Length: 166
Image 1 (cartoon, rainbow, N blue to C red):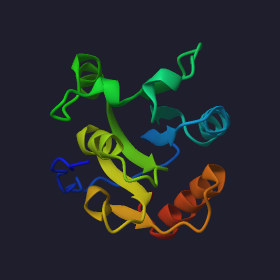
Image 2 (image 1 turned 45 degrees about the vertical axis):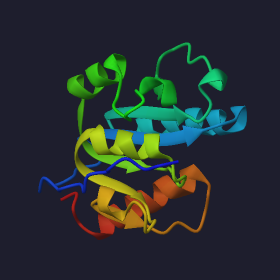
Image 3 (image 1 turned 90 degrees about the vertical axis):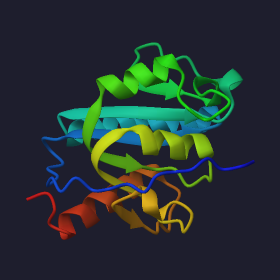
Image 4 (image 1 turned 180 degrees about the vertical axis):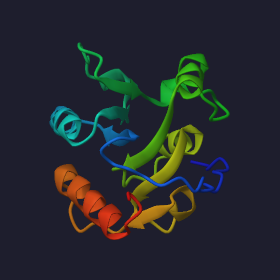
């Protein structure tokens, strides 16, 4: 698979306040078990902050799970054109939404996930450490766990240690 150019993320210099700022959680899934974990994290994160949006990329568009309450935004490779640009539905979503903090839980080398992170309007982007995607984020963490709840705890811990949320 060829990789489209991914732009280096430029920080906007705004401080992050986890409890009050607009937060976006970005995850990927390919199974019902992973979807259930995403739903749990989405519910848990609403206790953490006032303004949270959960977005999930489904690796197989034919296996997207029906999100009856609409609390989790979903997309797949079918939401991008052959050139890797978002189709109209996703373009409208990008235009209508901006965030203060993005927490990415993806560890896959997925061009559509990388393009999503590239396109989303966000002041501060945090993700898993990978030499391939380090330029997309303001801050990366090398996680020792695949558990997304533990990853969320690590993100919050290190963001507070950096004192960027004061």
